[in-house]
Length: 510
Ligand code: URA
Image (cartoon, rainbow, N blue to C red; front, side, top):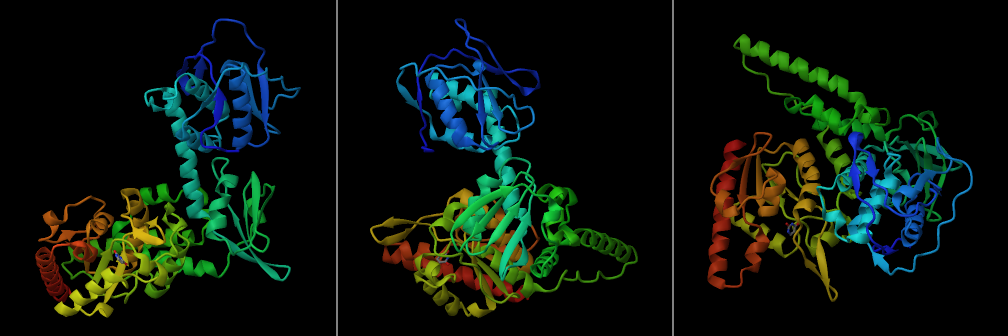
């Protein structure tokens, strides 16, 4: 039913919609016969299908936006009384709406703004006359709806990040229960995300509006009435792992309280075990800062910054576990598994590749296929023992296109690199390597946030945000792809030279 190109009847554009003061859409009435307002009652506040079906009928009957009142059953302000009958279709030809409109409408419909249904209908009305109406970014209506959709997506992102399940024993079985209070009507919309991520767990997400339950035994997603925070249990042993992880990655030198509060708004703190650490960590950071100042004033040597937390192995293991369920971008859908980094947690060198290839995807380990063999041979040649290094990828899922039965590597795009960057940053935050090597442009982007040209940055180290040293060289796959023998040899020799320099720098920094 929810086809990407909804079909609607066509008619002339009778309306001009503008945003008046206060951001409300004002709609100028057309000349001609007026129709009594039609009351459309949707079943749920996020009822996209209901809105689309009604909007389709209305638009095909030529009912202008000013003549429709939208409401949600059972919501405050619902106007009781019978619904008006939608006039029969005007007999005009069907029209289709562009897919971006459907995507935007599906998100915006979940916003808590009571005007959302009406605004979307005005835009639909405009699209009927001009299929490109959505491209007009200067149109305040488009702008407002884009904002609504964006706020909903942001709310969804927060939900993905901040839902924390607690384990509850229940009739000889286990259920994982979380409470989450979103700003918008997103609980149903995001249920699929949690089904994919926690597909084998029996879980419930309680929210004030609706409760969502997943039962993997019967593959059933069901919903129940809204709940309050006190309906969800407090605390479980998993929380200790989270606390370990957060205290290990906490870096007082980079403490930015405002940024932290923006990313992790206080509102969600009740649900998150790790937030019990925030106040002591901040206080500890201040104390350490004061101590540094005092030592500097007294001309005493600075104490080496202690590694906060200390349980590096626990933190890394928690991160690796978390990465198994990563859905930060769509690449997880087709890949076999997340390929996380591996190696000692006190490595001399921290290598970052591009993404797992076919063999890495199947094995679940980085650099074990043809590029890995070339990499290993080059390391051996310069005397770097791979087992003393940590090897990871900028993107943790294999991206490919199918050609027949073959899975052909496809380069990750900037959005995928940036989405996955979080994992690499957390790995580095835990491990804090003195020397990092970017193998290729994707790794360089992940490490620096910039698109760099390798030839321009290859000969001197970069300084990463944490102050550590980073060298950029080519990716081993690049060397495998060079068809011409002489050039291939030349480039391989250059790669080996880069590794020699990196080996020497690692020794100097050790
Ligand atoms: N290429 C990479 O960048 N990483 C791997 O793990 C394998 C090939």
